Length: 372
Image 1 (tube, one colour):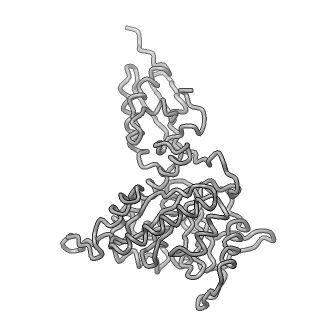
Image 2 (cartoon, helix red, strand yellow):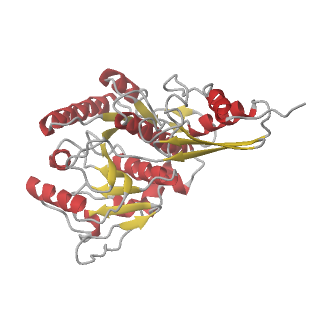
């Protein structure tokens, strides 16, 4: 009997059975499949995503391997998952080399906004993305302590060189002021400082620049919205009703800022921090700050709930010792929550980048595919 010959078209037809769970469409027509390699009974394929942090990456790979492996004549399968984060088509006023700016905001202090910003940045870097973290909280910079960085950045005669920790480039006002000094500045001075941190720092090529904004609705978010195009905003809140109401005001503020800046400021979603506490002895979960507040807020505002981070004392220890909790205890529920949040944020950014469709992580529109 003659041996079955595997063809490129047969592989592509098989991969049409792999459906993106968010889109309900197959990965071939979406343009995800970039290459098919056939060597006798061995078949390889390359699937390219628009972010290495895609939350369904492993699911798509397994389904693709199974689909190809079911073809007659195929004995070995190798599916490679790659990613190429790309910037929106229109980058007027953008920062050279920086593809996406993610603002992390909160309506009030004390909700763990900086903790979320730090762990989001590290989680994105762990996925393989190039990431920067800008501490825009001029009055109370906490990123240096939380990232274990206390030295002063170098100046090469033209630009400031960011520090580097845990795979993330860092910049903060905390690197330039004495620890026991307070920053007493008016609004215009904050805007000027932010402008310097954005344009006079040698950020290089970044997929994502995470900006930790000060709490509230003051000068820093207004200045940032005017200075550069923000890809999207992550709003951090705690579960109680009062936090929900304040978070709602923060979302409205960004809508107003977007209108005044003449470009949209999409809300990527809401993160609920300090959601519940699991007893280390019996495992019972209690909710000292209430429950489902962020879900209610997300439903009311019509934005996604990106994730829920449970309470844990190690999160505080991590911040105080300069080791993000996602690294201090990578197997903890908190670390898992931060990784999931990073995946959701990356997926939302991909959807915005490809033109506001529901597309999540695939590379539709990024580069030619075999289906073109």
